[in-house]
Length: 209
Image (cartoon, rainbow, N blue to C red; front, side):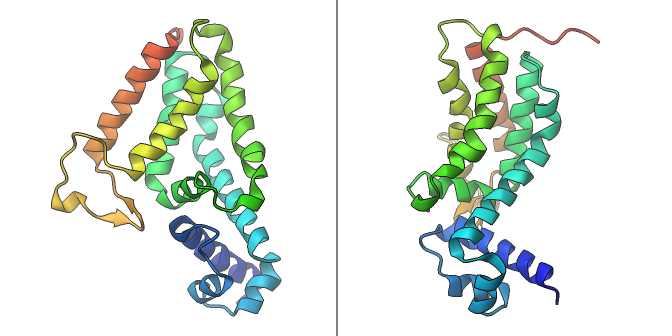
């Protein structure tokens, strides 16, 4: 098997383990065993656990960018533009609980030696949305906090069942430590987010045509 194939298996295994156990709770031996290689290969192909973690986060961010790229690239400060971006972001993380898990662990102080990743990957992206919206949003809206509220709320919803929803047996399955959201729950939550942002931002509709 090629080194590239081994590296991909290592990164995939590390992604799952970092999402479930966190960086601090995952040993190189665990990664090697999950990938079916020896620990020396993990170190040789990745440069060590911290560099492997950085590669995992880079690939996770690239996957998110690819998923929301259409909405982000053609973003307009309109109600429809915000809803399209929100929908693609929500759909991506509901389909990829492993990537959600990576960011949730970071909020607990996991991988403290890589604190620069938020500045590298998260703040520029959200900051760009804030600037694109600023001229269209009422002055009394704290736009920074409003935009940051969206990933906070989405990650909270996808990792914890919303209040007032009923747990059926077929809906009780989980992906690792994260529960599986039913289609009905997801659409209920999507409609709630649309209403929340419409009332908070009061953006104009996109022009017809």
